[in-house]
Image 1 (cartoon, protein in one colour):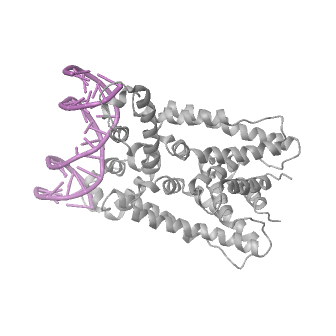
Image 2 (image 1 turned 90 degrees about the vertical axis):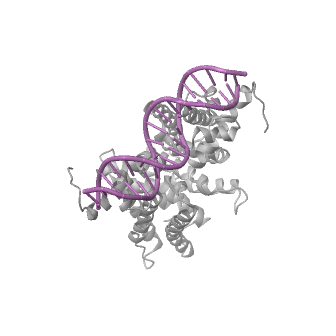
Length: 195
Length: 195
DNA sequence: GTCTATAGAGTGATAGAC
DNA sequence: GTCTATCACTCTATAGAC
């Protein structure tokens, strides 16, 4: 990783974000210094400020990027049956979160380190994602496919259950990710009273 | 809270723990200084070291106390039916966690700020709690009361789902805690295929 | 048991040379 | 665009007076 002084902005920028993502996930935002991020990238601390106005913006940009990607990748098709839409959601949620454990961890753990303004913006994105699942549950109840007493509670319960996979699942373990997805889908399907 | 110099050890000790619990939950371990804890208690920072050898021990003692209390309070009766034992577990878990949100939050969020030795001890306690639920599920499967493909996965899924209540439930909201417990029990009951 | 004072290290962010 | 140097604090933990 030897580097001479000079122009590297096009590669240094992403490397700063990657290093911050990894270190924030590993040690927590408050415990990571700008010097530590710089060391990971291979520059001095002062150089980071060419890529972010401050540490807070670095955190916010990572979280906003993750949430935007999450919303963009979740493709719900209201033309399908609620049953199929819910199955797709379960499969998507587990697979998407499994593919980016650091970003997921930060999005859940570092909310309190956002300024109030930044917190409100991330919360709004998270809420939009929840609303997507609740719409599926409501459609299923309306069509008589699901038996759910309170769609809001069921939404939160299902998301908490699915996100929990990230805390224990590791590739190469007893079960493949597809097997895990199948098992969670089985539990979700029955929890909502789907046929 | 006026106080003169002198002997207050019997009340200051618990106050240090209470202040640390509250502040760690609110801002995170790494973001809370010993001065902040001392300020909350009404003493100078140096005085805290009469009650804890260092900041790390303060965190560990809070987490170990919480986990020990959790294990002591969960009273499973293997003489009951698996159905009743599971219902009791759901009810107990939600109510116990609701009663001490700060300790629960710390127990989940600050694991990475423990030294490796302390982490291993807390993990062992958490594992014992999980094993309690898994024993119930296995008994239910053995007796033909439950239909669960993998009791370990179901254990983790149920605990994640139930613990999630703490992230959104607030007293005085749309639903009472008893109503929430009833709804979660309905979802858990169906997820494990109980009659 | 609590105080003040301090050691020794680390913090985020900026200025100006190259 | 990156460097070095630095400002102005803050941090944990300890020593010794009272």
